[in-house]
Length: 431
Ligand SMILES: *Cc1c(COP(=O)(O)O)cnc(C)c1O
Image (cartoon, rainbow, N blue to C red; front, side, top):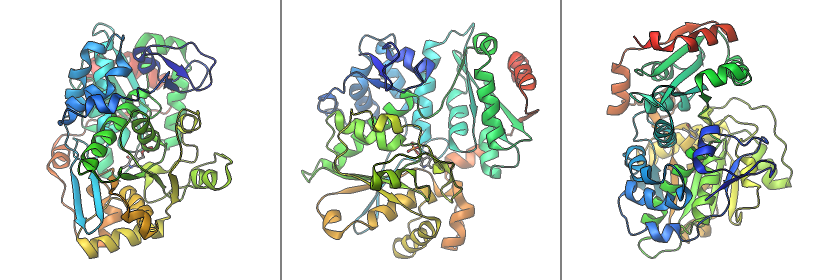
């Protein structure tokens, strides 16, 4: 299997190369040359998630250097359960937050790091460089811990993330380095961009990125969606529908990929927060990226969804796709209402998806099973959720374990010489 660029101006590459470089040379995003329409059927015999995922993803790795390692990669990345919880009549939550950092990003981060670790050379490892204000950095740090073919350097804006998030970005052991910058998130991102524009630095440290356009983050999302669809469809009902909280369209594209691989998936609702780029596009057909606005569901504060080129690439059947925009007031109301009715607590992102489904006509909701993707544990957003429910949220064991670790972020000046200096002295920093 080869991967081509959505812009068609770069040569097709193997999946290993697509994972290694992240983005195609022409600025486009990698897409598989074809979706194996029977991947789901082949995988469906396996009823544990890692085995299912390895079979489901095998066609994408056929002929690649990582082909033989795929079962081991899946055993590492999918060692997390994805239970379906039914808090009340007609509501099914697909809980994707039972990983070590409490959000679905654990799957993509673990899959990506497991691949890079095997592609990398311990004598000259890859360095994943990531600026983050949210779940990605913590998941990437956790997934890189203890590896030898890849290491991680995480940058975050000091004082601009919640205390829990700061801790979760800072608590990982070698080969993970966390740098806190007296700067805002945009400045952190500009600095990472500047590092990637410095050819000497890129070559010296084999810099690579972990952002959501990497195909190694989408494929595991497609695999667990297909697995969840199989389970929901097992009773012979109509193909399940999915309501997905989405920002960069990772979940949106992953659901369409899973469907293209034969998974029984009915309509897909893309639930966004107040950022209106996608809902405007769905209404008018015009795609107008813009600056993001801040919302309660901050991991989805995106005005230019990075996976949009994939959605529009022509590879997908977009029928039955619904976009619902959920503003902060509706997020609050949904969290409060479902806590009162069922005692169930959504994180603000998951609440967007629950609300988006609740807005669909009753006939549409009743004709099939529906799964609402719950993308983060509500504890991670306790400051938003607790005032709505009036109850304290206890950290689940995985997040309590994070809090028990010492934080070890180091200050770094927000300029390229300072970042380069840290990169050049990583070994001594692990000591
Ligand atoms: C990143 C994130 C999202 C958005 O995911 P996409 O892959 O962009 O669709 C939703 N919820 C949470 C909690 C997240 O961290």
